[in-house]
Length: 128
Image 1: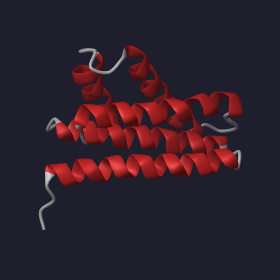
Image 2 (image 1 turned 30 degrees about the vertical axis):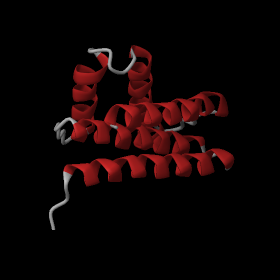
Image 3 (image 1 turned 120 degrees about the vertical axis):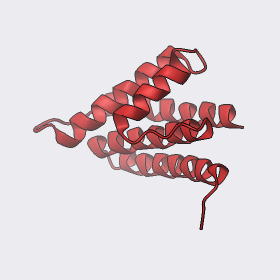
Image 4 (image 1 turned 60 degrees about the vertical axis):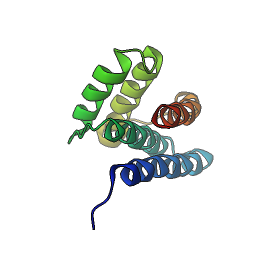
């Protein structure tokens, strides 16, 4: 079975939304490091959908970040602010997952929930 590009893009957007819902559950339970992880992956899946829609197929997280920046941030299709926040989530996800004795706080996490929600919406608007 061959999966078409449109189906894959749709699947990635659905995963982005589902993962955002997971983040919301973690936030409600004050699981801040795990919430950052899910917020990053929610944004990541949306970016993957955007890149696939434009026939880009990066194979690493750094590759996704590089191609996204080159084709969408530097060209102002997506704002510099969104690009900075996506990069921040990338760094924080790694810190939250791998750093010893580090914990995120509610004050850091909550603003990023709203950001990711808007980010997914903007990507959906570009794709459609």
